[in-house]
Image (cartoon, rainbow, N blue to C red):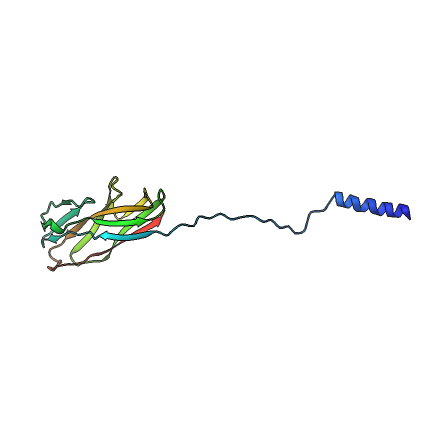
Length: 171
């Protein structure tokens, strides 16, 4: 009887030393994330082309508020201003900025935008700007653009409003 117990004990020890793979296993681990504030865009100053003549031509308002008017459309530049926006986002990250006309005015085209972030270099001649880096968590976007007047279809009238949208998205 002692040898049978010894054999059984030896067998159990051998099985324990050469364990079979487990049929189930658990592993506790962690996930990583960064919680950030969403992107915000607020308008401080509207893009304003001022008083414009009912003539054919194009006029540009620059990101610094200056005008280029080869067709002599502007006859009172007192109210002309660049658009000024504050963008709240993650500093140093890349963003795409798109400017699109949303409410057209018959006979007037608003396009060919120029942007400037925090007084840096102008990025010109487009409606979409890809990979723009914001230098601070709260950056200032200066917006310029062109209006083109078609005198055959445009109408006289004060305070005509061309709607446009400034969209900022993570790149």
